[in-house]
Amino acid sequence: MFTSELLDILACPACKGTLTPLGEPSSLLCQHCGLKFPVREGIPIMLINEAERTH
Image 1 (cartoon, rainbow, N blue to C red):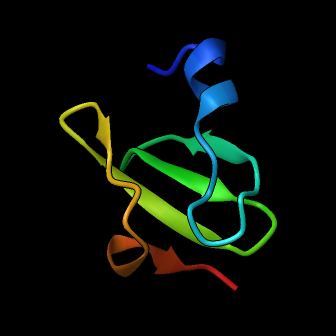
Image 2: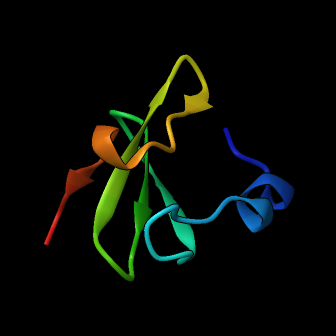
């Protein structure tokens, strides 16, 4: 789904942390601050107000 080049470019908009792709439903998780960003139709939604807090 996401190439390593894309993951190298993307960062958490809240803390600039590294993002980890998660399975279904597709999302990107910031291990540092715990925000999970949705991926809709293959497009990561990197808006803080769209993110879900995991911890």
